[in-house]
Picture 1 (cartoon, rainbow over the protein chains, first blue to last red):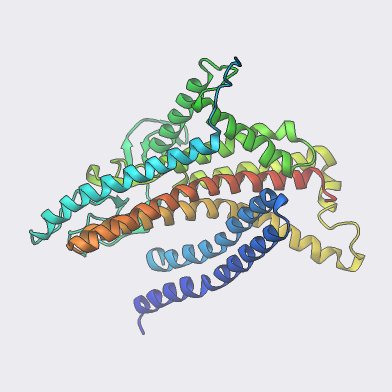
Picture 2 (picture 1 turned 90 degrees about the vertical axis):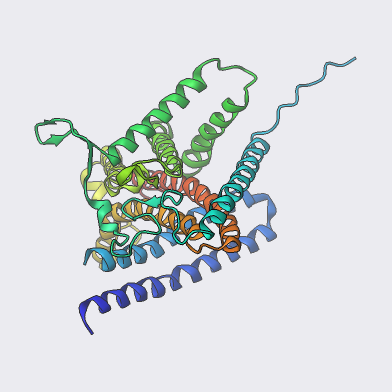
Length: 76
Length: 322
């Protein structure tokens, strides 16, 4: 396997596997936010704010994988 | 006979109407223009070049595939207007600098516009600006920072407004790519700008902590006093690493969100033309509009997250025993 093919495969695997964790985490977190809003609707504003913070932080991890894939494809 | 109370529409319904109108206008114009273009394109062997906006560096759809989408080109400096250097600082205007100036212009125009004729019964534009102000002051700084709210609200507010305006400017295709092609780009899609913003938060965090607690006590408090003494060095090391990593995470989160958003937008808009099929074009224009609205949402979210994380970090440095 030459270097070019390895780079493409590495980029694909990086992004593919790197999206598993954040996807799972996002689903769990938003599900929990839904449950807690259903339990106590009067704090839904705070819950929504915290959920958005959590979404931003979790999606950043997926974007690290995206950056690694881009580096593999175009810089290395 | 009672005086009728003036019905001021709430800012939320105004925002909802604006978004609905923009979405409808976008969808209709995209459908109309794109259908005409793809009908014309379907009758020709080659797709038109100038119809599809491109990401910087990506050639227009329809050109030969020898030139690839080269993200590494985003990290090269291409000078638009060459100006002389002052010492080691090169003052020439590149694409990033041009977008920074555009962002600055939009913010200044908005700020002056909202300050003219400030009324007690606000008009719609003033309501929107006041909503941004109260969101930053109460929603971000007030709800997260326990102390130092008045000191640090200007920085958090400036960062929020700057990143918000820059992200939104990045959703307007402007002709800055090679050959004056339309492309999506923004100041925050430049890694240097993102690193500078994260560096500001980083420096302010440690400056606030050191000024309040003194350097020695601030550093010692990175391992909380309630931890058992044996565990304090590893906890301190982990905390130090996470503090350094905040630079990377804040900047890369903002940068990668913007770059990925622009790439996705370019791909969707190009897909609507490249298949040279009328049905695919109509479907993909709807998809393009949806993903464009999602990118507007992401623009708001990224600005909000940067601001609130900066507030959390600075607040955490000020009150070190959460």
